[in-house]
Amino acid sequence: MGSGQLHYSVPEESQHGTFVGRIAQDLGLQVEELMPRMFRMESQGEGDYFKVNEQNGILFVNSRIDREELCAKSTICTIHLEVIVDKPLGVFHVEVEITDINDNAPAFSVREQNLAILESRVKGSHFPIEEASDADIGTNGQVTYKLSPNEYFSVEEIRNYEHSKSLVLTLNNPLDREVSPEHHLLLSAIDNGEPALTGTILLVISVIDVNDNAPSFNQSVYKVELLENSAIGTLVIKLEASDIDDGINKEISYSISNLVAHNIKEKFNIDSNNGEVRLKEKVDFEESAAYDIQIEATDKGGYPLDIAKLLSRFWI
Ligand SMILES: [Ca+2]
Ligand SMILES: [Ca+2]
Ligand SMILES: [Ca+2]
Ligand SMILES: [Ca+2]
Image 1 (cartoon, rainbow, N blue to C red):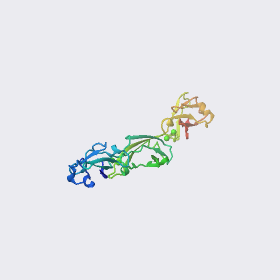
Image 2 (cartoon, rainbow, N blue to C red):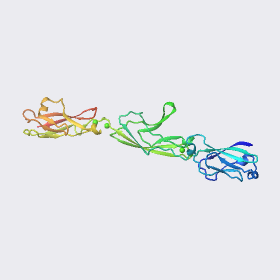
Image 3 (cartoon, helix red, strand yellow):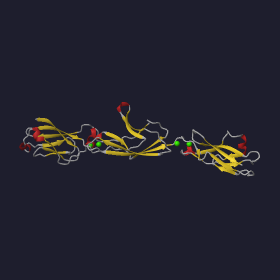
Image 4 (cartoon, protein in one colour):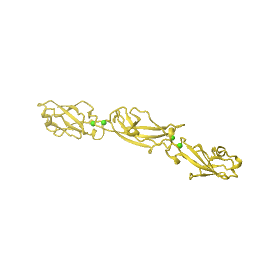
């Protein structure tokens, strides 16, 4: 009984009929003896990927072979076949290696990923993002990343413990929500195949506000003239400050500064919510011809950085 081992290789996804090998010739059998000796092939439970021509002993591809379905990420993918002849009995082992082609683009599990980043994060901060996966092997499955041009972020792979890597966005320039509250970046994953295939994901970065702006008035001094006999409750002026932050960080509370002369607070009051300054007591020209009132606008953010001060001069 003869035996032997043959080795061939064929790329995955080859068309039906693609030539794989001359089995008879490689085993030293004559074409004329194939039929009389009942030359035939048996696959070992591997489906009908291949067929052999029993008259000339040529092995060819029969049905579609998807390397990824058959062997997933294994670096070597082989199909074992058995060729048999009778008189005398010979059993020969044939191994066909299925080589990879670059037929899978790197893929992300979602089309869009949202990130929320505080505008106070320092330069050099890392933010983990999802990696792409590529079902191919070797260079066909090796992925490099590219981010759409922008002045704030770059993409890099950083090494973790145990040789694993993770993909991160790195902050290169300070963020400013007041300038750009949202960034849209296109991340491309490109494999090393020939030709290379690409997968993309949209990164939507929302910049979260911190209280980094004090309220401001649009004028540093307001001058108001008031008649001597104005009634109590008369509206002297409605002040309005603004703050370019967001949410509670832009909400403003108004007050009369504690630094002013004590009689000011007896004569005037201010509504802390709407900035309306009203007369609390009648004013007397003979007593004072002018009042300097310092008004403060403070935001309601957790840690107000600063207070805008405004001098309002009320002439009588
Ligand atoms: Ca492949
Ligand atoms: Ca690929
Ligand atoms: Ca802010
Ligand atoms: Ca603020």
